Image (cartoon, rainbow, N blue to C red; front, top):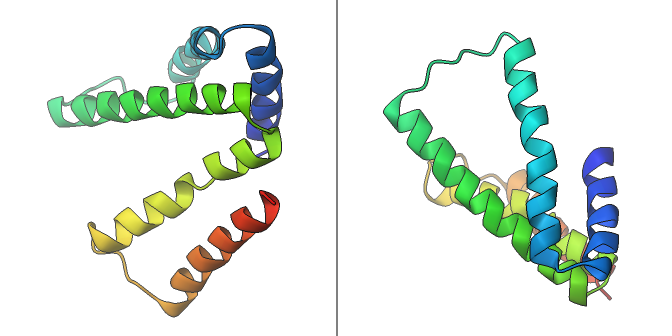
Length: 125
């Protein structure tokens, strides 16, 4: 969580200095060797199935869209508001899990989602 917070602040500063799309591309270019290096030094399997590779690629597509959207948002909005809205990804994932993937819908989970939305509204004011 700390590293994501630092990333948003630095991304905001980068987006004020250069085009946010360029900042996003540089961010990914720097991150890629770290991800590949981690695979090589960890015990991760290098086996890739067609389904797993396709889903990982599609996930990467959405990651790229989210990253570029975050940088564009940071170039025109406040770090507090944009980062808080960006952090709502877990609410989207939870809703998809409950609505489409059959995860249990509980009072506690529903309350958590409601409180998260309220939190975003409060922070963005």
